[in-house]
Image (cartoon, rainbow, N blue to C red):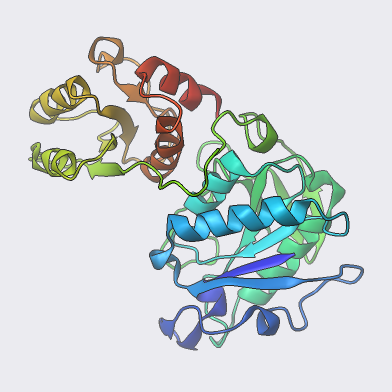
Length: 319
């Protein structure tokens, strides 16, 4: 089952001046289905992924849960814009209650560009989805002949075809014109093992803000987030999740007000570790090797279970 959401893969235009989400899923699939695979498709949305929102996430989740019960559906391919693909993939990775493969793909070049990458990416994603080795691996991302676990993959370049990488662990497999090979498996909890599964998909997700740090960083962004009524904050800190003394004091005050504060890093790779900031004393949560945007997704789901920082820290350690 191909679930289409839009993005550059469905965009039209010249060069970098194009409009996302213009082509329907039926047209995307013309001429790109590997032999031996039967396809059904559904248009969930047709937006650029800068306009992706949790409402579409919940629609995708509902379709996966409903359609997984059908024996003739072996797996799901989701076409998606690249800007927020990693967040959608991780949300589904933590929530989809099925061992059937779910593979996200997209394109860095629109469908009418001089050399579009979308058709081969979609062809390869369909092959990955149909491969028996994909069963039970959680949600995958197939881009530019590489296969990534949803937890680890990130968009790392604004325009290159090889924009998607897993900076800390690398890919878990490769796919070359439909020929799939795996060399690793995800080690963290996901899908059927996840402890963060949504119980009520009708309820809104908790409001969580990301605060980005920089030289001369004060506490006004954090204070603005608190005034907006956030339940959690992910701080994209410097280096090993470090922050200015002013911001540190504001973070400590936020915890005292009942807001969960997660220390992440703006660096893009590596792990936020104990050391320069006493997380135990302040009752902060460390994001580990999750980037700020993925830490936000996990924190939203964790806040539906608890506001206890120690319990939430264990979720970060294991998912």
